[in-house]
Image (cartoon, rainbow, N blue to C red; front, side, top):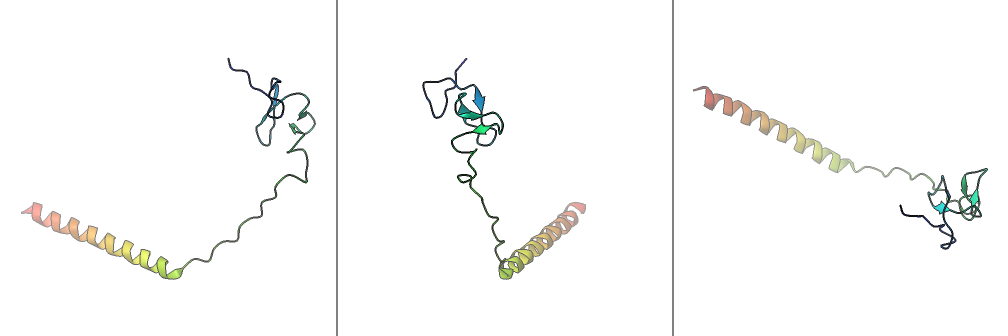
Length: 90
């Protein structure tokens, strides 16, 4: 069985894992109250706050083109099915 080592101290065995970033940690690097690593995830100043992206405006021209192509494709499939049925019925 492979032994994991602390991300901050390669000479020490990891006995914990950060619940936020998943890094293996030794006793010194682990904060048992927060169950996170002391160096990065425990410090609110270093945690990244990702702001939600604004939705991109959709190009209506391409939406219309795709809708028309879907309609044309469906009609072509329907026509092929009707013609095929007529050919095989004789």
